[in-house]
Length: 156
Image (cartoon, helix red, strand yellow):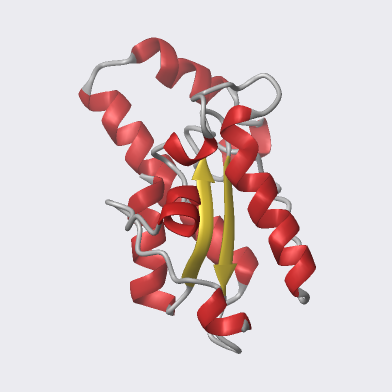
């Protein structure tokens, strides 16, 4: 779902994925938005909706009633009154504009090391985590599902 969304925003809005990591319960991404082409709030909101529909559809196909019920119970009464049936994502998101190369490097390091830090330990080496752009930058490996745009083509 996240892979499809990253592809969609590239095709529809020309938003480039500089870096990403898909974690079990969250996603980090460094995206390049062309000037005056896209509103980040709209992009993220539409992305959450796109992925939530895909998730609910998949759960319905698999008859995962327990999970569907959990997503349904997560909806507030005002959300339900507007016709929302399931809530798969938090309403808010945390975005930080990147204006300097040192800050970009800090964020790259943080997101790429996320799979091996703290409670996660999803792999031994951060470059081995398959749902990340780390191997692209460290080993030059093209990601199978995401077209990664090398930030150095824009920043250096």
